[in-house]
Amino acid sequence: MIWRLEAMNDEGFEGTVLGTLVMPYCSGMPNLMLAFLYGMHQGAGAEIMTNALVNNVTNMTLLIGLPAVIWGMNVMGSPARKASGKNSKGGKSGGKKAGEINRLSLLLTLTAVLFFTGATWALARDGKLDFSDGLVLVGLFLFWQCFHVFDVLKANVQKGRSFSPMLPVNLALLAVGAFLIYLSIDWLAKWADNQKGFVHDYFGWLSGLLMVLPNAILALYYGWRGKPEVIYSSQVGDGHICIPLCVGIYALYQPMTLPPIFQTGIIILGAATALHFIAVAFFGGLPRIAGIGLVVTFGVFLFKGLLKT
Image (cartoon, rainbow, N blue to C red):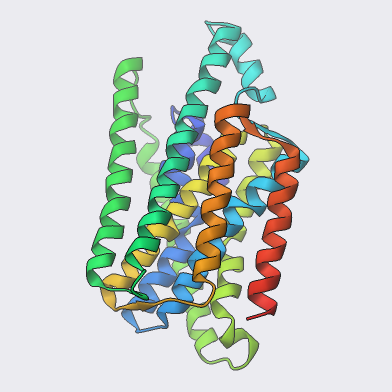
């Protein structure tokens, strides 16, 4: 997946667009398949919500905070962008302009997280999510994706470029990877249903941590490559797959009950997103001290949820 994502990045998909439109379906496919399987086979809805919250909180705390501690998360002036800016037609101004565009794109994406999280909390105030709530959540996600598709098409027209002929091939190869993920998650869900004790009782937590591993690999890889805007947009975009899409899909099949960790997870998710918005808006990225705080927050969330519930 990284091989083809890199190819698409070279073929006209900017980092933030790639992280918002394409990468979330790659890294979030396990969560999406689990929501479909549990919805069709009447699995516990609380496990899907737990899976989504664990996934999103991990994305917004550990998987952005840790690269910030190791490499830094300055979307306005990463080394790779500075180099490309100096070699471009516009020189240094080209790199500065690209950084500003990435910053604005990230602020928009982070705003969407706040709206999606707030909408889920508002719809779930009666203690569950039903079919109507599912329609609203899935509709919000589809509108968000359509917005980005037309944004990419508009940018291509403005820059006088078109998609590479290899785009269908790249998408097909990514689809093969998604199908293999589907097979593995189907097996995992059936295996967990036959288990007793810790694995069965904490399946939502364990599956959430397991399914965030693809995103962790992407975060570390693009941190090493010096592309913090891809880290940011991919982690945030992966969160959109879980909330609202996965939660909404399950609710379309049957009513979803809420787990005990729901309120805590929503509060941490909203607070972390607000922190990222402030950091990107005023500092151009996440300071290392804030990254350390997010990593510690993840540890507290994991301890309270996994060991105290």
